[in-house]
Every structure is written in C-alpha cells, then in structure tokens.
Length: 156
Image 1 (cartoon, helix red, strand yellow):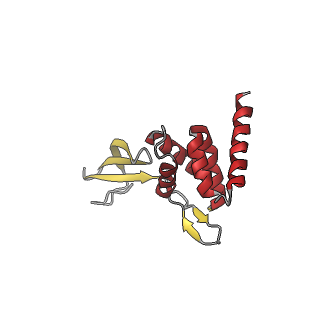
Image 2: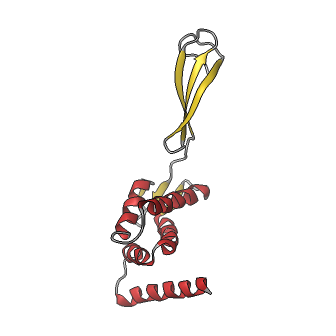
Image 3: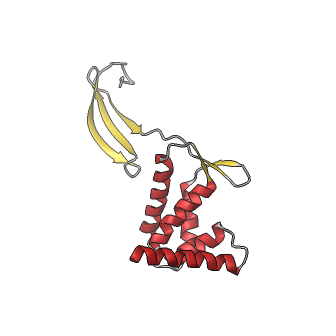
C-alpha cells in the first residue's frame, strides 16, 4: 500500500478492525517514510447475483427483499428476527456457493421453502401459498399432505 502523502511504498498496519458484520476490515496505517497516518478499507468483492424472474426479466438479488418476504410469512409466529436473518444468510450463501451469476427465481423460492419448513411449518405454508400461487384448495391440500409426509419421514 503506497502512502497517499509521499508515495512511499512501505507502510505498516497499526490497527485492524472488522466492520460491516465482518464483511470488511478497517486498517489504520502509518507511512514508514513520512509517518503520515491514514485509513484503508478491505472488502471481498462479490459477484452480483442476477435473479431471472418467471417472465424472463432480470434484476439484482436483494437480500432485504428476501427478508421482507420472510418477515411477512413469519408474522405473528414464534420466529425471531435472528432466525429470519439466519434463513436469509443461508439462502444467499447457498446461492453464492453455487457459483452461478444468474439464478432462477424458482430456485430461490425452493431454497427459502426448504429452510422455512425447518423453522416454522405455518410460515412455510404461508410462503408456499404465495410463492406457488395455489389455484384452489386441492393444490393447497396436496402441499399440506406433502409437508405432513416429510415431517413423518424426518421423525422416524
């Protein structure tokens, strides 16, 4: 890191602190040549995730939008904000770990439902009813029966 004051090539780090929930590091530096002190920030450069919607339009992945949907599904349920944050974090991590810069909205919905089913069954059904746009009560009942069967299989 070059000194912004005298362009010296060597500087030393006096202090480092994580910021932005550990996603960045703030470093306090001092120039070996002129003793000028300055601050630098180091952050991982993330590839933007693009969501491909059903109708073919594209938009950048928005974790806040995902959290709003989770909050709505978990409304008046015993699900903490920490659990919602954890689901959002895990879904985004899985999407980034997949290594694709474009993701189908359908895949995101499936990841969310997998996580929600583990957190709260009612929130899962609420999310699924909006996400899958149940056309009638029979489709809704099929989803409930699938969930009941998964619960039985997981507990045996």
